Image 1 (cartoon, one colour):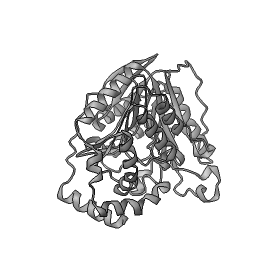
Image 2 (cartoon, one colour; image 1 turned 90 degrees about the vertical axis):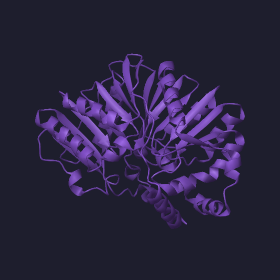
Image 3 (cartoon, helix red, strand yellow; image 1 turned 180 degrees about the vertical axis):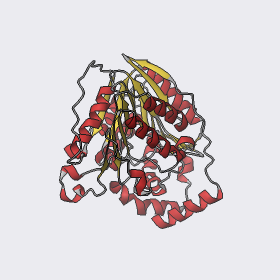
Length: 390
């Protein structure tokens, strides 16, 4: 069934290739407490800002990404990291080997420069079988910090495809909230560094502000608080809860929270790809649509481009942006990082971004969903048991 779905999807892409047309805003700027935030929804804008900050780094750079493509965009960022090390900046890099397995091995190698240190997160992760916590999960995080002052986090990987043809969300922070993201990197580095790699010292908190916090899923500690963050927000919602997800395969607790919110009159909206880059994941998620639509949850399918963002905004007060999808791999499997932000102004911007995205969607109605053919229903039934694996 998976093979048939892939074949049909390949034919569809050949017949009507994605245009990459996606409406987006110039990066909005928001002040949240003592921090200045910029929200990026177009990859080219994000990479330009990242490159500028890397070029102006004076002391240290921490760079951790799930995927860095061996294309012009990936090579450009890699070159700037190397240049920073050559001019005296301490550069530390973590790349997930699995996420980059389809790239040339040379893309995962760096020249022997005194100030440049890198580790490749292990390819083989047998922890799911051995139950050894240290060997669980992939490093799905996307973090950049510069000089303990500037940080980036969100859904974007590094690559030319993502620069122009994918819709994602990333946040740039300038301010004290950077220390949490920096410490997240340091903890990962110290846990998986090679024996000859330097050990990093955690940054000291300079200013604690409850409006922004970093939430980490850490398989090596059997700690997965991000799911609870989503569930708590849905449980406390009083007006609306708008969610954008690249991959949407909700488990029973998430379904209960979504259906429960909609049943008590909350405007629950879920924006997902019409066709994602992992088409089988779309089909595994589809069996949940009937219950959601019956409960009043509104589902919007993003057209002409892959939407890869992992965001949620609730009641004009709280929002999250990060790397965690609504699926088992993100919520119970991988190393993930999300920002939790309590700010009316930030939530207002996230609502505007969501509204812009809605202009490029098709709303899936219950009537339309009930009219799908028998072959589609059979495919959903066959693939539904794969949900715990994705």
